[in-house]
Structure formats: C-alpha cells, structure tokens
Image 1 (cartoon, one colour):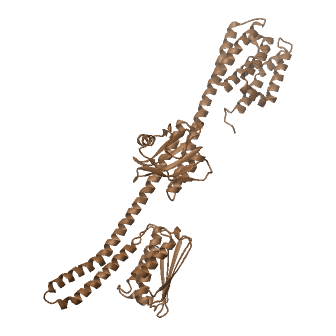
Image 2: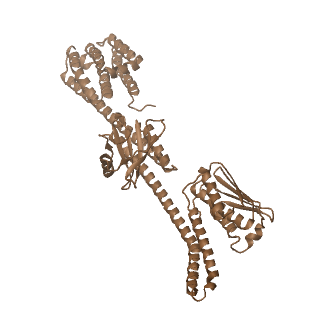
Length: 544
C-alpha cells in the first residue's frame, strides 16, 4: 500500500472531498426545488466532477507538469458561485477543493499562490450577486487562506518527514553494507583477497568508475603491490609501481587521516579524472591507500564519510593480517633458532669440547711421549670430521618458507647422498596431487618425517631400495615410506626403552600425533617396512 502522502492516493481523497462538496447544493435544491438555486449549475458541477474522476490519472499528471491549469478549475467554480448567490452560495465548500489540491501537491507556496489567484475571482463572483454581505465575504476569504495554508504546511511537513525517512533508510542500508563488507573482509584468507573484495565493493555498491589499492612497504617507505579494477565485472589488474610516502598528496592524507582530492596527477601509470585518495591507517600506522574516481552525483559528504568508514575497516583487517603474518614469521624464526641452538649444543658443542680437551692433553704429552698421542689425535680427527658433517646437515636443514614438489624431492635426494652417504640405496619418489596446496608447515612436517625415515633405513634396515610416496587430496596429506630391508617387530621395537636405535621411530609417531595425524607401522623380520602417515594439509603448529 502506498504511503498516505502518495500523489495518487491524495488525488483520490481530493476527489472524495469534491463529491462531498456537492452535497450542500443538492440538499438546498431538494429543500426548495423551485427556489433561487439553478439546476443547471448543479448538473454542470456534477459533470465537471465526473470528468475529473474519470480522467483522474491524466489530470493528475498534467497538474504536476502544468500547475497553471488549476486556474480553469477556479474560474468554473467562480461562475458556480456567481450563479448561485455569491457570498451565500452552497458551493462555498466545493470551492475549497482546488485550493486544498494546490496545498497538498505544491505545498505552502503553491497554496498561497492559488488562494491569491482565487481572491479576485471570488470577489467578482460576490459582486455579481444581487446582494453583498462583506462580513461573511471577509470571513470566507480568511477561511480560504487558513484552510489552503494549513494543507500546504502539512504537505511541507510530510515531505520533510519523507525525506528524513529516506535519509534514515539510506543510512540503514549503508550501515548494512558496511557490516556485510566488514564481515566479508574479516573472513578473507589473505591480503590479495582483501584487496579484491574492497575493489569489488567500490566498483559495484559504490559505483566507482575506477579503483586502485596499494600497500605500504615499511622497508622501502613506498606504496606498491597495487591491485586495480576499471569497472564492475572487470578483471583485477596487478601492478608493481612504486609511490613514495613523501609524495605531498599521500603525506597530507596520511597525516590528516582524511580523503584528499587529486588536483595534480600522481607519478603512477594510471590517469584518474576527478580522483580521490583515501588513507588506510591502522591506528597511526599507514597500511596503504585507495585511489578511486566517483561520478559527480555520488560525490557527497555522506558518501565520502561512508567510503572513509569502509577504508578504516579495510585498514584494520589488513593491519591485523599483516601483524599475524609478521608474528608467525617471527615465531618460526625463533623456533628455528631454538632448534639450531639445541642441535649445536647437543652435537657440535660437545664434540668440540672433546676435541679441545684431547688436543690439550696431547699437547702436554707431545715432548714426553709422542707415540702415545697418536691414537688420541686419530680420535680427534674422527670427531672433527663428524662435526663437519653435522654442520653440513645443519646448513641443509635450514628451511625455506615454501618449496615445490621438485625441490622437496631434490633436497631429500641430497640429504640421502651427502649427509647419510647412502650411495647403494635406490630412492624412488611419487608425488601426486597439488603439493603447493600444502601449507609451509605441512611441507616441513613431511620433510622432517622423510628425513627420519631415510636415516632409519640407512642405519638399521640394510635396504637396497626405498620408495617415498606423497598424496595430497581433500585437505589431507598422506605419506608412505617403504623399503626392502631386514624389517623388525614393531611392538617389540616400540616397547623398548628410548635409545639411539629406535628414537627416530618413536620421534616420527610423536611428531605425527602432535600434528593431529596418524602413524601406522607395518613390518616383519626379513619382509621390509612400510610407514604410512596422514596429517592435515594445513598445520597450525610448527614442527621442530
């Protein structure tokens, strides 16, 4: 149902009033059929009202386009008054209908203009009557102004109220839009997805003709990693352009925390007419900037305020995401440092201490008994070679953030050949699925487990062949390591105390359980060994 101030519904109410305005002359004619009231005037008024009713839609449209047509209606009513007694005519209430219409459709100003135009017509109708009562005439004139002005002022208030409601509805829609976009941004998986979602919102919901988003690089103090979109539905356009933070427009936006007009072109490969720069700040820390162009009708303070609210939400998401990434890298670095320090302490440091102690004792015996220190020096040489091998292994174990399937296989082959010196062991690899879908931590986990498995095969299995298979599917990484070595009894081996011989096997099981996975060992004496491990493709804990 349309609202009460809808033009069509108002026009129907006016038609009802016009018909009711014919009731007084009808009553007067029924009371005195042969009196002074002409029947033709009533019939003409009925005919006029009928025509207005039948063609109400067309007349409604014409009155809004050509308000001066209302003068014809006023002229006809003035004739009705002049023909039916002037100041004492029963058509006085009927005469209010066009004045009320002027007030409702054209508000207070239209009501006053219509009443002023009606004033000479009414006076002429009164003067042409046989007698004149100026008191009643004056009261009627005042009533015309009061009634039309009241309806005009009421229409003005209703219009303001409707505009206020429209503004509130628009604000509500804007808040819902900001809420939906904020929720969507917080569920983004990475920075690229945040950029893409913001650009899509700017070019669709906000009607931007062009939108670009660049991120701040604290190391170079510049803005790069650009992503742009020309218009809604276009592909995203990445670019590696660099924009200095010292550029005046950028600096002004970041310092004032307010949008800036692009009066001069920026040193970028894009030309933006009527451009706007929005700063992305997380607290006082600059995260990036947004460059966009808006159509003229959308360039309003309300729209700019809404865009800045969206920019602040985007800056919060980007800032939190970058902070999490930075902390994750710092945690990984600290964990890697702790692992290297522990390995050096347990191996290299102890070995070097033994070498130093042995060389010191040998130096003291050198003059007294040179032949006695030969075995000690041979031992020191052997220990030095082990230290060298350990250092090579530490260097080999330094982990990249992300590796490919080819690098994964190549590094394990080098580990077997250089570190384990397994020249007689044939190692075959079979990697299926999307290896790059694994998180860096999942890749590291599989790599460490493969290292331990190869170490056990070389040192204990006396195998000539080994096969390593990795299968990534449906968010699960499945690793199987098989050899044709001497095998063992898994229950017996796992029931023994910890020792050098079986620590790698237990370590693999504990490592797998810490990752939320499963580890199954299949082996029999002289029948080889198979180790099957399943872990989630995305890891949340760092494998050490």
